[in-house]
Image (cartoon, rainbow over all chains, first blue to last red):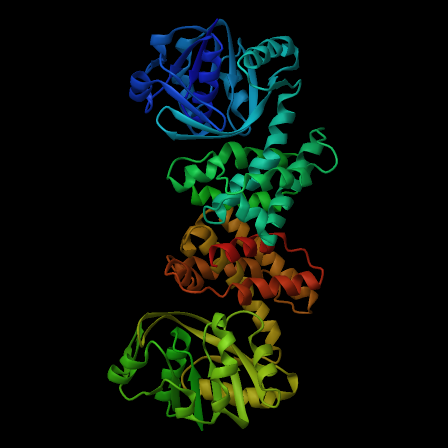
Amino acid sequence: MKIAIVGSGAIGLYYGALLQRSGREVAFLMRSDLPVAKERGIRVVRKDETFVLDEVAAFARAEEIGVCDLVIVSLKATGNGSLAEILPPLVGRGTKLLTLQNGLGNDALLAELFPKNKVFGGLCFVCLNRIEPAVVENYMAGSISLGPRLGEDLAEAEEIVELFKAAGVKTRCEPNLAEVQWKKLVWNVPFNGLAIAAGGVTTDVIVGSPELCGEARALMREIIAASHFFGYDFGEGFEDYQIKITRPMEGYRPSSMIDFVEGRPVEVEAIWGEPLRQAKAAGVATPKLEMLYALLKRLCR
Amino acid sequence: MKIAIVGSGAIGLYYGALLQRSGREVAFLMRSDLPVAKERGIRVVRKDETFVLDEVAAFARAEEIGVCDLVIVSLKATGNGSLAEILPPLVGRGTKLLTLQNGLGNDALLAELFPKNKVFGGLCFVCLNRIEPAVVENYMAGSISLGPRLGEDLAEAEEIVELFKAAGVKTRCEPNLAEVQWKKLVWNVPFNGLAIAAGGVTTDVIVGSPELCGEARALMREIIAASHFFGYDFGEGFEDYQIKITRPMEGYRPSSMIDFVEGRPVEVEAIWGEPLRQAKAAGVATPKLEMLYALLKRLCR
């Protein structure tokens, strides 16, 4: 089984490294990290251990990799426009595609590009930062919720889940991908968004300010209301739970905020724009999300 | 008749200069602009004319000025905490107090400090910038809407209006001060606020972006809804009118935005905090104002 990792941000480096360490054949498609990865390998820094993959199959062009069994897309969603050009050499008749990207719209794009292939999506609940080329830092073990774009592909989703489990990643198979995508947005929309709009602040500033924490909760309620409309129920107290899990993160910098302060593209459409459009189309009132999106679209242009 | 101008920002310099040019005795209480005003006078730059007041009675301490007939407070509202200390030497039994400050809560403070004196408020609809010490630039003629804090003082308000008219300022007497304060907030809340929250942008960016212009309009509707609750009606099409008057301003930088980008205090409580608290107390839904206030409070801390 041959796996391609497309995009060497924190997610791609981390899960690609774990899959390779578990014995899989992994090919990394990279740009900026390529020389470092070739020379020094990929390094993963965790609380309890640090490990280095010395031998990394890293490539600049998909043609050098060829057709794979599984293509994992871990590019930032702002780079989705290039997938139509990048992916074809990796995708054959039986190739499965897995997006580990943030927000909404990514699996729909893969399905559009490769209508005959099976598409899956995974949501990574994890704190990762790529601290320098080919070096990724992991703050908490975390987990992946992984599901098929179409319900009929559930059995294949379970096979991919086993792959990650064998690599030591807590992974759960979710029959409904859209549901877990909305579920993750309940955290990402407020915390990634307010961290940028409040001037590049860490999560402790948001939960520590009565006003900003109130806005975070109000944004969560809008996402939860939209989720309800689509038939998803995250249970009682889900809003409180988000605050509870955020407090111990202390000075955590949400990934979009890091992108923002470092002048890199921010996934504004995937995380805020597409959910806003879907909620609006469903007739769900989202005044807070609307304002946050308007500000982010300008701030992150 | 002796007039004191407390605070030599754009508003104080401009109206003080016009009052003095019309023959009134004006004393300026200044801090940073004092040496320049003493040496070179005050200069007013307008589209059609530039004039300089060579002889300016500028002072550093209120004791040097003594009791006045009219005390005009043109400090930024963020400096209100110092008024209890600054004003007393200027205020005698018959002294009238006029605040030309932005937002809500300023006349209430003056009435609290000097319960036996008559308090008035003026809203300046004008584009002014203090471009260097003792130099103020005026972009459009503009006008003042001036009224008594208490309805019973309407006749005295009319006397003050005449003073400004004689100085060449288009001034209108308004029987209800709170009404004109809310009316001005319909512009100030969205444009000063979004100009900061969107990253320090000019008004053309706001009216030129469908998303930001939509937010500006939504903020206006919240202020108009609160105003309705208090019994004020600005008439049909008032929201559209705000957009219409803003378009020709082109690259105008709202005063709060200038303060923000130049690192000076921003009148967050007067312009956003106090209106939000009054609207909330009245039970008017203001989700947009609430988010804007939360962001501004952090951004301008």
